[in-house]
Length: 500
Image 1 (cartoon, rainbow, N blue to C red):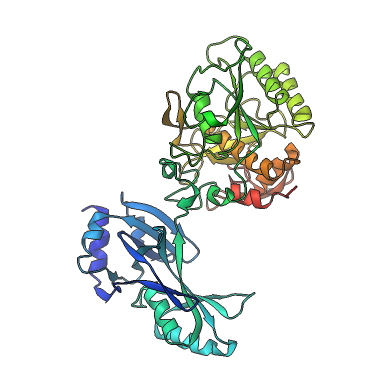
Image 2: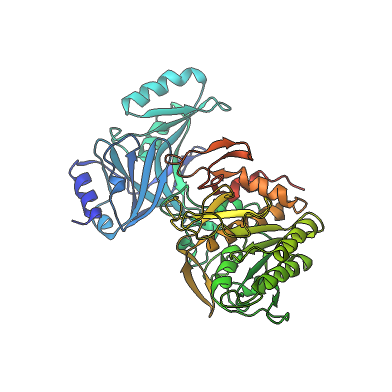
């Protein structure tokens, strides 16, 4: 039996408790707001303390998991589930799991219901009445607002016998409370209407909500406008439909002439991750979709004078106004290249220093690849997968600053196409994009300022298996040698960036 049918069979066996209303609504300012049920989806809610979770069934129709300290909620899109609703949905439950409907508002935006509801008392002396009603309906009083003490957060349980919307409306219609609102989880799809956006898990992780860059929230504050990212690589397809509007300048280090030349797909892929155009209705979105791209191309594989070309590419970048230099490559140790890096960090951005981002390297758990460890100012980025664990190929060690998505990354490719790629090479341009968001918000920051902001605003992923500890040489929070400070978080970094 397929897993989705297993879920239906289990839940159906516990019976139909109550039919959903035909014209759903909730109350706002005392007035009914009508919404429409989305019969193609439903939510399956599971108590976190439960030992047998229906959510952990492998199901190809599961499109998103929402989690907090109390519940796991899986949103399913399933024709087989929808087919059971011949005469309106029904509330199905077992002892630890229950199902909730999904809705859309008048504008067609997703309203995915959660187990929570918010109650405002008319006066503080009414708390015993709320407690009595909660006990009657097997509701849990989760919290009281410290700032607005008349407001309480409650949750339904498998024993409540009504879904959140019905319960909220019933409580309000008794007249015993000033306001009662159901809680919805919003899809946040307003952040991009590019057709492949939902396939970009680093930007919007459908299955592991805490394992992405929190980019939708960050874009409310910055999109990289006015910031230039230099992609030092094997060339960017300057005419690509999702990159061309953001191309600023280019050079080919083989000839020292413009435009740059495409020697492989690698540079185009990195450029799209950092700064593909957003909301053009084409392909994907970059982390910093309004940033400008500078392309410095050279032959890396099976070539001569590679160190010389890397050094001159770095020089060209900072001398021509690059704010960020994104480097997803390695080479042999070189005084020549190190002098160029020194100059970019010292003279770039009118003395504030270019932000240099370097992939940690695909060394299968070994040390970072050169020149990541050359100077502490270089941002060294390891790679994680969609589940939030370190990629098997990613470097580890004392030089790791943080990690970013690097497995099965969809991005631009030559020929106006899109492909997936994996490697710490893919992780680095995600961080380059975040640096561009920070610099748009405050271009006066030094390269060290930007590094510090990103480091102290990370998500501590996989902490159940690998502890983050205080380290004397790491002053921006707890750290370990696999994940560094953790997964970069664009939104938290933006919020922590002082305005200029």
